[in-house]
Amino acid sequence: MRIIKASDYNDLSRKAANIIGAQVIQNPRSVLGLATGSTPLGTYRQLIERFETGDLDFLDVSSINLDEYVGLGPGDPQSYRYFMNHNLFMHINIKPENTHVPNGLEANEKAECARYENLISQNGGIDLQLLGIGLNGHIGFNEPGAEFVSSTNCVALTESTIQANSRFFADMSCVPTRAYTMGMRAIMHAARILIIVSGANKARIVKEAFYGPVVPAVPASILQLHPNVTLIGDAEALSLL
Ligand code: GLP
Image (tube, rainbow, N blue to C red; front, top):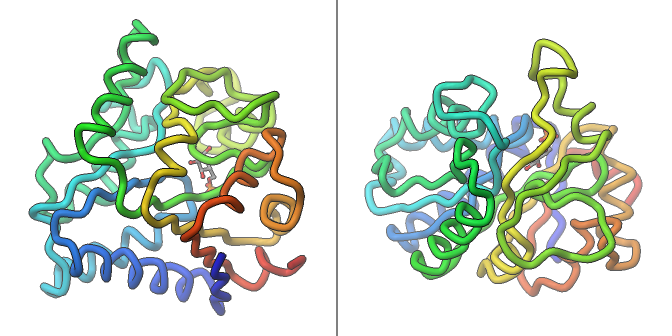
């Protein structure tokens, strides 16, 4: 694993955008695995700027997002589809039909998981997977558990995740309790993984995930087994390494 120390959040975002940008320049037909949460927002702003200056072209790029809340549709400002549309897709020239997020409104969980898993293989897998990390070590919405779950699945969110994500909702009772998430196989089969971490509250889990044992109780620890991972963090998030 390559660890890159950024001087601050802006520097982290620029460095992450440099890596994603280089991927898109080298392969204009790249399949990008994308993430939500607060951490990638700066990276997405950087990518938009580079598109606006003509340095990046997303015309032939495809994207496959990690996850979506069950029950939330594209028009819901808390849905991850809405987040992606408004924080990235609407501002660049990626074709809407080439952007993929699990369908939170699909009530048939089995069918939606199978559809998404199929879609990932039809796209030939992921060239570069962008990840954040949850405070409990989740990646996507792969929560700590007894085993690593390999394919797209529908998960019950843990109390800690519901609590952490409640900051985006009016109150705790509005936070969805279930989510669709890409499984570990698609993430681990990505050719490259870029994980970004920011802030002192991530320091403990970053240390556990990358220097502790590889265990399903810390889902991100599986990334230790991937041959091409780049971790970019600010000084606070990397302070315990
Ligand atoms: C959510 C997302 C994850 C993300 C995590 C951390 O739970 N499902 O993909 O990595 O939050 O988010 P943040 O970057 O806001 O700390």
